[in-house]
Image 1 (cartoon, rainbow, N blue to C red):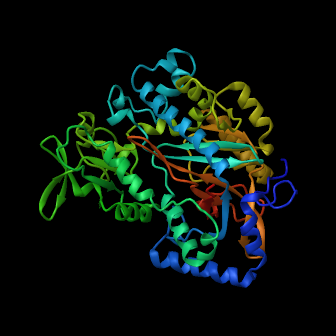
Image 2 (image 1 turned 180 degrees about the vertical axis):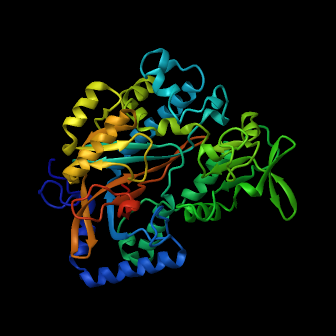
Image 3 (image 1 turned 30 degrees about the vertical axis):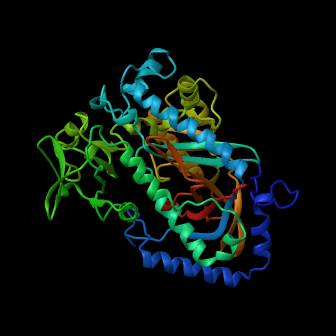
Length: 471
């Protein structure tokens, strides 16, 4: 694996321009003072209740995501290029979803294999010919991006179902502004705090047509035991809308109604944070108690908007990801601005052979996996782990893809030993409604373990505030 790109120091020619001020600031700071500030941030997060659950962790049910106080910085020109590529990609993703649930022209053109769509567990046949408001399937998208050099960025994943982490982006910024106001007074950092307002505007813009009143929006959560419950309640509070569970809703008179102390109130837009399978026990998983019986019929009739739409997970699938360059070109008529990471699809015999022969060099992921679970990082794995994973792949090759081990860029990070370089990625958050709204920056996730490339919070990663400098 090539040496990682150092985002502060570049290739050794001196401190890069976006980091000049922060570099100078770090020279004036004592490590103990920075550690004290980190403790203040953790105390602030604990008081606010910013936690996440780790499934299967018996020692504790709630954890703080470690927060690093040294920001990750992008110049205005870097962000403009990323923003153009992200907008191109999310438009193509929504066009792709509309197509496969209608005429399936991309399949007819031979650009995507039919069985990869029709036999995909994330494809919902129940969504065929359903017309979502404004033709949008994914209204809230997280695009995971990695950097490998001064000018090379790659998309690692597309999160089109229920992307999480935006609450940490917002709280990280608030903590940094509280602790280091002098940094913001001397740097023109693009604001992120208008995300909740933009989210509400986006949700209201995709309400069913013909309403003679302001749309009623709710956030549907599985409940307090969900790993992202803090985010559900945080976003509902920030938008000024109701946070509800399935038991708070009922279908009556052909509409979705919310139970209130003043009686029933019709709901027009549901920002759901539960999976497709649990949405409606009359249509999907029969024993679900998280959803609402009959909600899918109301949605299909056009009397309700569900965000993100049922079936949007088809574009979240890692085997679909491998076709994204074709998908972008097919629907936009242009080559992708942002590249994919080269990917081997184990369902293809030649790719499978290569992957099995090169496992120590590759990162292998489950097609439907998330959160860093069920993956193999070849260079960091033992011989026994590689052999066991090879058996898993051989048993069900359709479930796996593999990618070369990229040299993810690094950024200075405060760790127990002092300040050290750690690998990171970026998840910008995109809102798609009456127009595309993109929050400058996004959530930077950082691998806190030395040499680790796994940034997921569930696997020991932390987060940083992401600064986009304005011209």
